[in-house]
Figure 1 (cartoon, rainbow, N blue to C red):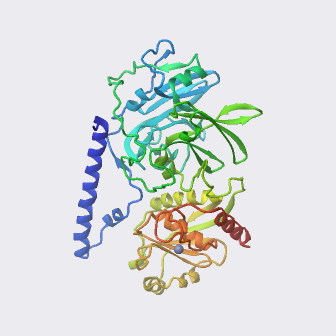
Figure 2: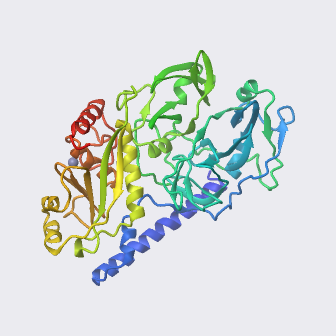
Amino acid sequence: MIFQKIQVHLGRRLGFVGLIVLMALVLFILQSSRRRSSLISQENPDIPIIQDVPRDAIPPLDFPKYESADEATWLLDDDVVLGAEFNGDARVYPLKILNWHEIVNETIGGKHLVVTYCPLCRSGIVFSRELEGRLLTFGNTGALYESDMVMYDRETGSYWYQVGGRAIKGELFGKKLTVLPSFLITWKDWRSLHPNTKVLSLDTGFVRNYDSDPYRGYDALHSPPAFPVSISDDRLAPKEKVIGLIIDGVAKAYPVRLAKGTTLRDEFQGRRIEVVGDEEGLSAQVFFVEDGNRVPAPTVATFWFSWAAANPGTLIYGQDSAHSSQSSIDLRVPVILHPVRNSGAVSTERTDENIRRLFAKTQSVWDQANIVFAVELQEIRLDAANSDEVKKGNYRELYSIIPTGNAFHVFFVRSLNGNNGTAVGPSIALVADVTTVNDFRATAHELGHLMGLQHTLANPNRLMYQGVNGTTLLKEETTKSRSFVASLSLL
Ligand SMILES: [Zn+2]
């Protein structure tokens, strides 16, 4: 049985697919009449932001009311809730209500925060609303990105990808929100931790059927996300419940299932971690252990598919590490991104924003090796001779137009004779407008070549596998690329 909201989502989804088909047809007609058009850039959309329902059709709560734990008789022991506590002020937000509102702007124990929940990812995250001295409040764009809720801030209108915790469009593009500690756990567990908790009241000011769950059945372990995502990482089932933690840019997922009825102990990025599961395997709490005390960790509780899409190459507790979990210092590598423009047929149709967005994801792939690209964007124009060489597939001539040996250079061009990307050692890579794999992955892969890595044939999940969307690095590859860039005299 399909419930109301899923129908709304899927209905919109079909609408979107229909639109893509229509656009492809338009493009075909335009191309066959040899007319170029700015519509071409739609042919290779980055991960699309899909407008699913109208803005704030899922209304955020700005003036939430609360009741006591004793008053909340409508909550059942095993109902899942998102709870947060700051300075002795404990509040809890039942999914029964969050399913219909998704965003609560609030201040708890003096902390300005936003409680967020996307049913399509089962993602419960509490973020600080403070950003670089500015106080933000959030609404719901009604759009989806990586099958996840996209919020907007009312101050600048920038779009925020919830599970990624970062702005993907607008003035604040690229900024990150700070994740605050929270627990996505059962009501009985939260209540026993915080008997004096305040409970979000059913009296929200909106009329909704809070007793009905429009997402029932959506969490079937092997069922796909409601919308396409850019990375499918089959190390876990798509709807496996995980709790994600990022320390110093390194991401790790703790499968809730592994903590069922027990406590997992881990050492990650130099921190001691405990993951306390409940008896039913419904939820788990992640703590830092500091001086023998448990301190709630700033976590992202979500489905695996969603965590994996937001954090390519994430570590998984209980699986072989994609790389060493020992902390290592960041290595900075200068990279200059060159959109090739005004250069005839080789000119890229990518916008600067598209390239920045692409490269932000490229960076997140290389986060797993703690390699940080110091990026500059420099549009470049090729003279007729050079653009001719590029057209012919002779990319080495590009060395004549870059300064020697102070950075990696990535050129964005219209096409590479059918290749997604190519590396022209020692410091030039090129990426085509239209790629058959994720373009950021192609970029990350070519940078891998520039950092001394060769192809692997063994495993399509890996970054250096040829021709697919894998993004993980082995420990050996991490070590190799790090020592390669560390040895570059120019850095
Ligand atoms: Zn390659």
